Length: 262
Image (cartoon, rainbow, N blue to C red; front, side):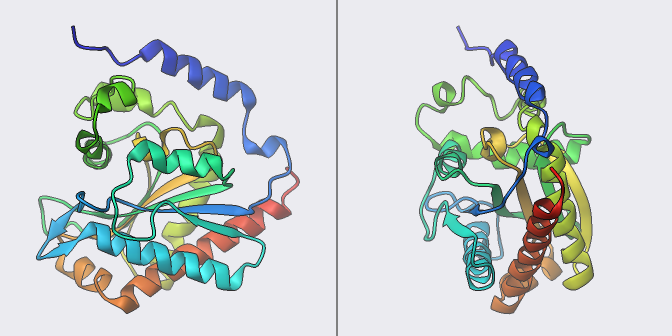
């Protein structure tokens, strides 16, 4: 008999997290950031015109980490991967938890059936409000199909089930406001400082953000299927610009959170 995704247990987690309130209940310092380069190894992610998502994501992630290390002395940078290797989705957030990270940033490249789809979008864990958001989550979450015994590991989660993604969105409730705040700053930097088309801040159920016990965002840096986005993202300069934009957003978020009377 096929296992049923444990709805009750997830709902219990939702109410448990809700009972803790938000991070505004205590003073919040940003001392450790985990930067996650999406995909890797035998999982190339999105591919188009011989360009692979996994390499762009890694390049941007490493550039972002370097900029943070060079400019913010009191922040420790940890990478989920710093080379072309496959890391399971649950291990990415688990690593962030082990390091007691204060922020988790997962970097990706988007794709679409239409080559006209263009622009950046940054996600927080939450309820998808459109079929497009669901499609992005389903594509990113389908990576678990490359893992051994994924059904047991992810409590019977079916990456092709819309209902499962809705339930998944209940997680991260305690950090939603902070995650949306950081996501908004990232999209603002992309639009105003790098002149990229911003598709805005969105919410959807991503496994990679599922069990992260800190504010977390998933950044789609552009569409690999769009000529303009792809040609920009595959260049070293374009990657530096994107990493710099995320850095500025992270720096502003850190300053804002640490200055507030939490």
